Length: 330
Image (tube, rainbow, N blue to C red; front, top):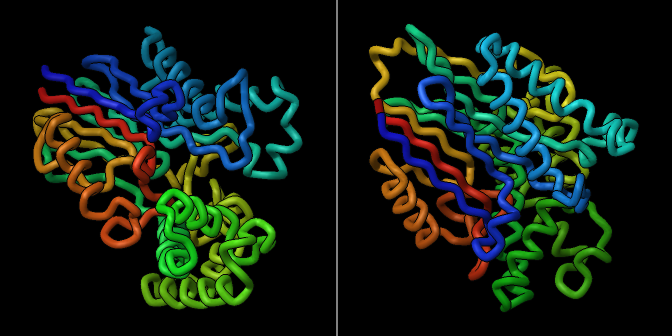
């Protein structure tokens, strides 16, 4: 067996800020955990909420799967991880705020591979991915993320006509994506005015209607106008909405929103698990191949507005996101 693993923070000079975590239990389980970036600067025991969520899930998962009587049923695992996160809110006096406002929740995505006697089971909660044998990719694509990514793409040239500094350009594009086109103009004063925001909103709605004809106009307008902070929370673990998506946050994750696939052990030669900080998959197994693909994506589209649309891009000093890769060759 060969195991290769790598992770790096979006700020390479501050590795302690990395919100991605790895779980490696050889012959038993492998996972990548991606803590969701906090929007409000909320801290738990000195850590940002994404780090705290990822650490809590990592510890709970390792404990559960290392115990002699630990369950390896995917649904039971999700329930156990939810139960591990739930007490955090009471501990920090945030139970009511977390219940009412998604922005106060600690959240994490999970990509888990369980190795059993006869099968290899894949469990996804969120948008990290798994690749089996280098050619079969399992991932949940979120239309919701594409909507805010296209919002940023439409905002990019409008902002570019107003600012020349690359860092400021990226900062303002995130401001639009995070808070939407209906945010207070005080937030973008000195860069964008009401006419600019109206242009961005109109173009973003039109672009999304064309790219996502199956999504309702109401949902598109909601996310464009409200952005991630003001609109996205209503979709998290909400099975009643078309754009609802699963996430570990201490609240119930609807079972049918989980992505579970099973393979025969005899058919699996390699397992690769990765977080969404990789915008392009490696053309082969291993850290070197995936880091080469990462470098190519950064050269091709560092701002993430052309080939690899994202709610955030890279700058000279920061990557767009933390990234993690875990590969196992049997």
